[in-house]
Structures are given as C-alpha cells and as structure tokens.
Length: 194
Image (tube, rainbow, N blue to C red; front, side, top):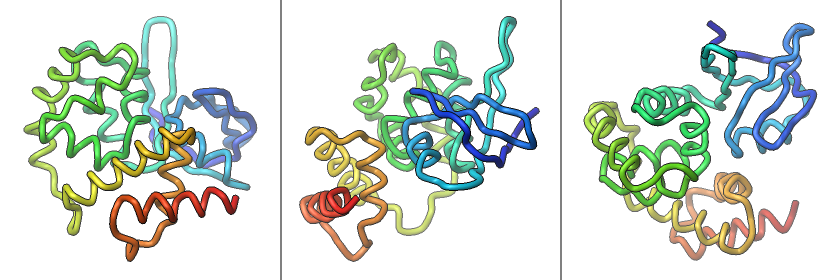
C-alpha cells in the first residue's frame, strides 16, 4: 500500500495533482486546501496517502498531514460515504473544526457537501462521535477559538475568496490577534499583499 509520497508536482487539475516520484507520475486526488498548498510549493511536496481499491480502479488520495488522513479513513468507513465525499467533507473546514462539529452534533459543516444530506450527516456523527471523543485533544484547542476561525473563514468566503485562500491567510495571522473581526481584517491585508 502507498502511504506517503514525496515528489515534484508536475500538473494540477481541479481536484487532483500529478506528482513525479522517482520518474513515475502519481495522480493524487486532494482537497482544495492541499491542492492550493501544492501549487504554491516550489520543489518537492510530501503528502500522506490512502489507496482506494475498487474493481475498476485504484485511486490515490493525498493529505498534507496525518490527522487529515486519519479523519478521512474514519469518514469513508461510514457506510454511504465514499472517498470523493470524504475528501469533499475535508475541504469544508479544518480537521479540528470538523472534529469539534462531529463531537458536538453540528451537522452544518457536513451538509455543505454536495451529496451529504441531513440523514447522512447524522449518521456520520452517530458513528464517529464516540471515537473522536476518545482521541487526545491538543492543549489550547478551545471551542471558542475554533468557532472564531470558522466564522472568519465563512466571512472571507462570503467576500468571494476560496475556503483554501481564507484558511491560508488566517494561518498567517498571528495568534496575538484575537477576535473574529480583527482576524478577518488581518487576513484581508495578507491576501491583498499577495
């Protein structure tokens, strides 16, 4: 099984990247955030991967960090959620925000994905909530911080930026900037400087 790749991105499509790894081109399906990150890197990129084996195809899915890959595997183990839906769910928000939403029974993030209705979202929550509650939480991750970050992303998307651009800009905003409005203002400055 292919678990990790490091190579140069030689081509990107709407939902995938082709990575040259030792002279072999691997087509890797990725979330919008991962794709955005891959397009910005000059040189080698590393991704955690999951190989989905089906009768007619072998599809490779890539993730920037191991936590994202773990959540993806949990999502696709829920009946009715395939790899494409799992990847689309990961494209809606960060792993921390999605984990928090599932733990708290918030279906709003999950239902933003085409093909995931309220019943599917409730099924995901029912099947994953206990597993996610049992996982260790990083120190300092508080619900209010996640809520502020989520609100800031939603606001930037409403202003016409992609979720990937919004998350990338917010990552560059210092932790000393507190409050949704202030973080949005700083993120807009960062986007404007690019």
